[in-house]
Length: 158
Image (tube, rainbow, N blue to C red; front, side):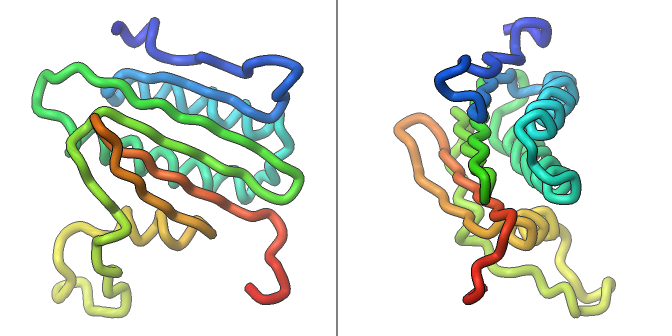
């Protein structure tokens, strides 16, 4: 799959106007093109700008990690991203054919520790958790599935 072929399954039509889907190759060049399309789709679907910024950062972090750490050097893979927007929330599903990795099992980063005392890594997962109201992982037969939800309006109990 070349970078030119890798992006944009797109909006499936009038029957699902706020559902968008993409299949991208596991390379950073394709990720950059996808991120622009993701932002445009989110804006068109009415995601508030501050929430769209956070959601885009989270999706870029998840996909970047999959590309950098989930595949052996030179391995060709695919990453599918689905965005569903409802009046009160945005849901993103990211599925890949990378090595198994469950981000929900990683201990929370100690963001209060002095920089010199912090282990390398873990801040990306901290960002993902901090910017998502729901983070669910499901192993797949040939990869991973991650579901992220960001609510636009917090419930009174939240």
